[in-house]
Image 1 (cartoon, one colour):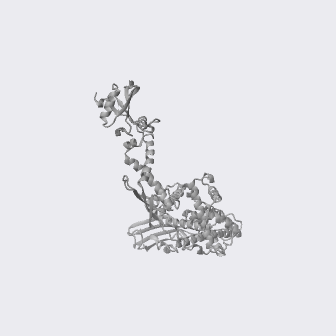
Image 2: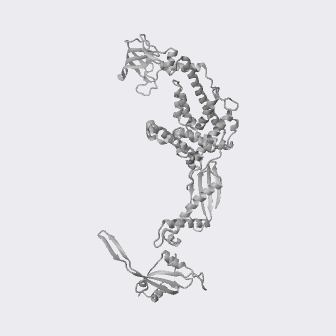
Length: 502
Length: 110
């Protein structure tokens, strides 16, 4: 066997394998024994038919062909191993017809894992954003709480912008009635887009019981071209005005907002929550920034196969998330009016980012000599089990699962290391170091999920930024701890050596 | 009798192939292959006729010895739509022909 390797690009290898006739003979002999088991020649027990008899039955070429297929597979594997390549997918084979007595040559084009040329990642410095909570921050949240606790109360005065009004409204453009509303309640706003633009200014100043006719001009860029730019006639009767009354900032508000007794207590809780939120954000921000810098520094050739795989992994993830709300991916796609191809295309940029991220982290893990031992895996599994996933024990893990988890742990460790390097000399926040440390590991372990992972998780975090109860904080952390479920289901092929079936 | 009537067809089975390849043991000719081929022959053919027929059918071979045996007709069960029938398969004669050393019959070689 003679192998020559060409590299059309860093992420692709062209293997040219030449085989001697004797190798083919040997392979065909093996194939004969295999085929003899499969065919029963009359007069012979299975597997006992002489080669000549089998040749008469299935043809000489068939035996050689069979042998050749096996030989190609084994030699391909061997060639890949010898040249230290990591295939990312199935090779494209160019295998010509066999010629009796002649040496045989085949070529295989296969996407391979390209080496990542790391930049000076050790030189990356990321500023840790301040996690101090200022009075102003707290005031903002308190104002928000006030806003949430506010009530709309009817008042006896002319309407103002910001009030809520109840109106009967008839809108006509030319001789066409566009809307005819009764007892419609809405808030008067300074700016209003669309067909009703300009209306609010006319309504302001009206008192309860008053009727008014006026005209406005529909904006030129209105979606319905028939109406755009036309005069719109209004016939409005105001039936009520409601004012937004904010509650006083006092202990009563604190009681209404949650399980607080005094205003001070609430402010304290808000402060604590804001701090932990800021810390989370800071941690995430630093992590993202460090990784981004490392990725930008690095040079690598990412094969489309990897991106494609990642896209599919993301789709699976999406599917899993959707299935929790009992929606299938197909339904989701119809709902959002996207075809699967479009969705695929849409995910590609992020998938490419993720692939690069993972590759860079793998490279850093190698460069830093990071390893993952059984204890690490055990810890990871505990986290995973705590998540309520399928219970898994170390000794039950399949080889592929194990490799997959190991890779994840190594990536997480590389990430932590990277962050550590990038923020050297900077203390982590002002908050209680212990909890931060405790979270750091969990968060790091789930880093992939939390940062690049499901958008839902992070947006959920954002919503919880309105602190009504402290439970929100706990939940936020729980989210971050979540190890990626995808790790357990299917070993993702990302940089794992792909199956090399030919 | 015609040759084709005497030699009905050659028999290639595991057993007959073994006979083709069996080596002599001991004596002056130790290790030599004794080429033996198996035929189904007419029931009424005798050893001499078989020898003549084989030599005529495969020019260039010399028959040293012919061993014959009568194979019993066996009772067979025939399952048809009209029911089960018992039927006797015909008895037949098998001949094992030993050729001179080094000779082969390519048509029957396996």
